[in-house]
Image 1: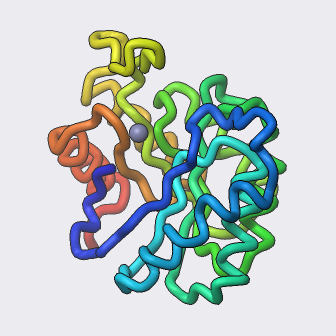
Image 2: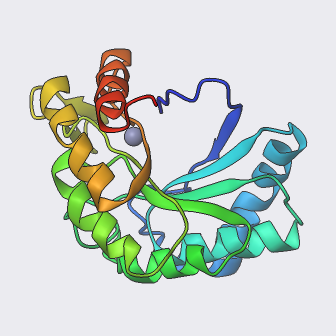
Length: 204
Ligand SMILES: [Zn+2]
């Protein structure tokens, strides 16, 4: 994950299975037990922010919300989901339902999308806006495809930095408040995003 906000100490909690398919083990209690100690250890390190990212389904979002309450975590956090179709989160659960869960938790400061191809981001922002007034963050991947069997990214299926950045003003108009890059983006991508944001929000 790259962000121009390099002065933040950000730590992240990542799902147990990125597809969101946990089989019979996929219960709320299983997920809470899996993440509880990890969350406590991260919180004890006193980061400025905890990023719950690449959240694949509703159940994992619910588990995080309950752990934030039960562990009495008072460090700001954001919830970020990922999608492979521009409509639902990656497990097939409704993004709107997932965003509602994040919206209802006072401990969640922002809601958004990460590790998702840039071409899907516009419609996903509009879905999230329907159910929250919290700031919306997005940090898409390069648009390349991840081959889960070979456990590697397939090169040259993505968009160039220029193409990525051509989306930035649209995402701003859609209401994105925080914009960055996830897998396979580079410092060059972030530089290009920063230049684009400077044009969109010129210094006074
Ligand atoms: Zn990623």
